[in-house]
Image 1 (cartoon, helix red, strand yellow):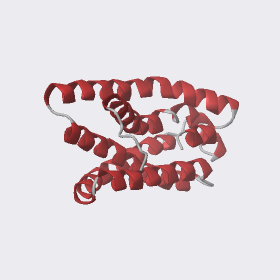
Image 2: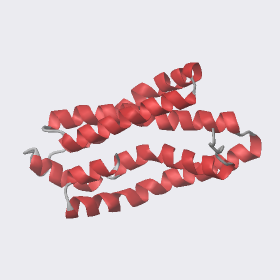
Image 3: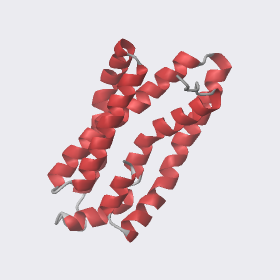
Image 4: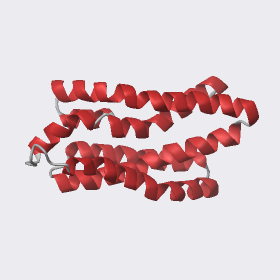
Length: 173
């Protein structure tokens, strides 16, 4: 059919980027807390915006087991595609949220979808590699996963400053 199989290095790079989207989703929006408070009429010292991180992580926690079981039953590819669709819908809904409550609901949905790439990435890694090769691949993937939260707030701050906090959320789509 003319398609080329993905190489080992490409697979590891793809897995690293896929797994890192959950870290991106959490970290990119942190500089926007002040603008979110202002837009939704929250007090300047309100801690309600911390709920955006909490609901996201709660969504991730709830759905990890589900995606693991589903990917074992139906295969990795259809489940990761489904999870990525949920991720994109949650991110887009967050960027377009008309109220703070809707933003919290959208962040929860976003978290549900973000768990899938994380879980399925680990499954694909274990399916593909073993021993020392798996350890090296996992080390690289985790290094990227750790670097993303270092860089993401700077991207989020720039987008928030130049466009709006909604652009930072939209960037992840």
